[in-house]
Image (tube, rainbow, N blue to C red; front, side, top):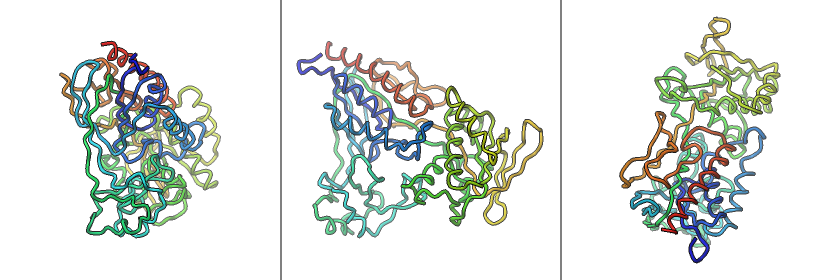
Length: 425
C-alpha cells in the first residue's frame, strides 16, 4: 500500500453492469480506478432492457444504486466517449493510451432540451436499435449518466449550422471541441467490454430485414419500454397494428454451425419474460414459442412452470426453418414439431427472433508480447498470458445481470492483488 493508503490503479474497459461493479468494488477496497466507456453514457446493454429477470423490475433500480456509489466512492475516474487505443509496458506497470472523443457539449449543460428544438438534422436512435430517431444533438435516454447532451459528429454539420449555440442559454455547446489523448499507468486491466446481439440479418430464411414485422429479442425489449420508440406499446412496426398472435423463435442463429455454435443461455428466459409483456397488453393474444430446449436453471424453473399455465401460450419443440410473408403484413412461421413429427405452419402478426450474445471487441492494440486469449466462440478466457489482464461478465461468457455482478466482484479482487504487487514492486 502506498503512503496515501491507495493500492494502485486499475483500468476497467467498459461501463456496463460488469464494469461498474468491478470499478466500485475495487475503489471501495482502496484502488484508484480509471473507467473507460466508448458510449456517451454508462450502463451498457442494461439501459436498453425493459425489465430485469426474474424480479421483473426496471433496470433503473440497480443502475441508480451503482451510479450513487460512483458519486460517493472516491478514486473512480469515469471517461465516457473514450476508447483504449494501446497498452504497453510490463507486468504490474501497464502503460495505457486512451482517446477521449469530443462530446461537443461541456459540463455547463443542464439537459434543458432547448438545443434539440432548433436542430434540423435527424439520426437513427441507437438505444432503440434504429426504430426511432433523435436529433444530431441528443440525450441518449431519460436519466442517462452523465445527464448531459451529446452531438453526433458523423451527422452534425458543425459550424455550418450552429443553431444549437444560439439556443443554449448556458454556453454549453462547443462545436470546436477536439479529441484528447490521455496516458495512465495501471497495475491491472479488467476487460468488461460486454456483448452485442448477433446480427439477425445474417440468418437466412427468417425474414429479418426483409419485413418490418420480424424483430429481435433486444428490439422487443425496447418496444415494451416506456422510453422506447412506441412509448411502451407492443405493436407491429409496419402499420402500428395490435397483436392478436405472436411467435417467439428460439435459438435464432444459435447452436448452428452456420452462424453461432454456442448457446447464449439467457435467451430462453428472456423470451419467457417477454411473453409477460405481451400478456399484460393483450390478454387474448395467442403466443407461440418454438424451441429446441427451454433452459431454465435453478429457481428459474418456477417461472417457466408458471408461464406454462397460460392457456393461450403454446410451446412447440422444433427449430424454425422459414419465416415468410403472409396476408395483410402477417407472417407464416414454418417448423417441424419434433415431438409429434408433424410439420407446423403458424400465421402470426409479429415474429420475435431470440438472437444470441456475441462478445464485443474493444479493438485495443496490445504490445505485451501476445494477444488476448479467446475461446472457440470469441470470449476471453480466464488464463491470459500475463497476470493482471482479466475479463469480467459477458466478455468471457454469456450470463445474466446477477451473474455479471457476482463475477465482476471476484475479478475486482484479483485485480486488487495485482495492484498490491505493483505498489510493492
